[in-house]
Length: 90
Picture (spheres, helix red, strand yellow):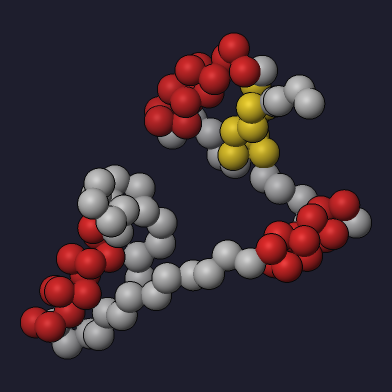
């Protein structure tokens, strides 16, 4: 199973997945391509769960915008257990 598209390729953003499907022709296992759909209703449900306290995001660090380069370095170094959030004032 392939999850995510990091470093997947500039053309489609899914280079890893496409190579996997092409390789599956010569493998005993069948690899299929699945593209998930994003729906507004799903995000509305997630918002409700978060607001109700039933779903808690795993945020390891919170940085102000001026520390965004530091946050990216921490993420790339693999020293973050959860996610990193950049605060944005409205």
